Length: 149
Image 1: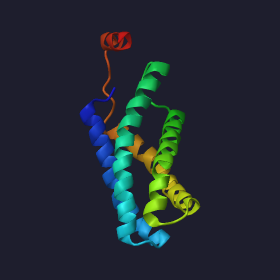
Image 2: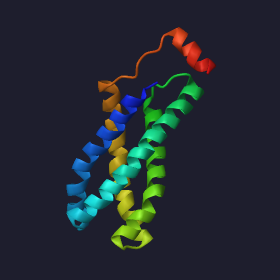
Image 3: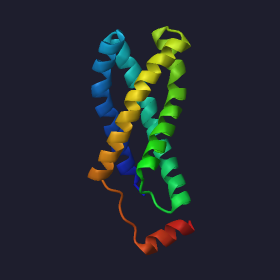
Image 4: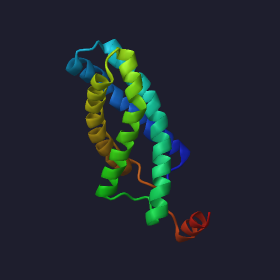
């Protein structure tokens, strides 16, 4: 299982790299100012960072309980990314509509566009993160103690 410092590094690096892509790309694609997309992106990133930490913690505990390990197959990674994006979509939709002064439907279309980007980005980022920072291996004794808790 990953420790707190590792989860914080994961969440922050995920959001910082995403912001460097989303702000200029979103302004160019959607015709809003860099300021508006930047504000949406920063608020969204802040909410997403908190959600990312909580979601990954809950997901890892669930996968550990269900499978006995935190290693993720390709299909578990797909499920992980889909569930994360559904959650963040529901959290951000009201804010986007309000801030941009657009209808919920327009906000939904914008949010779906960001969701598609983040879905692909999350899959690739998490895969690469696990390669660069592998999950520490547990000894059988550590696994027994953890499972007993």
